[in-house]
Image 1 (tube, rainbow, N blue to C red):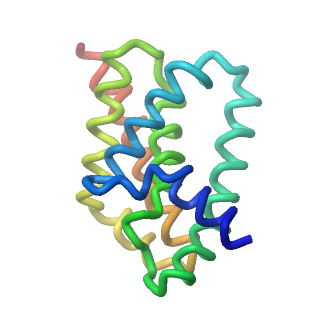
Image 2 (cartoon, rainbow, N blue to C red):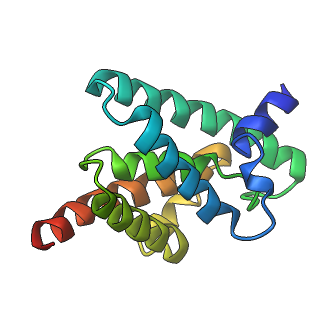
Length: 149
């Protein structure tokens, strides 16, 4: 179970990247979105996100406990899920993807209130929920930005 949790929490090793693993994980999520999941029927895309989210909660909790830290930087399944959520409501054009990526990274790194408060949730919930919220905010603001672009 620990190996499976480590693999998912680091998103197949992406979290082991030596520089900015969260940004790299978001970029990987963009690639997955553009070339694998965009165009899926809504129910299937939603099912994918829900499964990734709940599996991420469990895997993050186990791997964080294994490392002895509440939210280690190598856990990036939260960035992947949050970025996929940020992209879920947008067209697949590169302008949309770029705006979504930039806004998601901004909100994930800066973590304004109330996103920062969500980190206080216990275990894997605190790891995953703040990024899901950042993804929703990024999606909404991306839609607004794209109205003017």
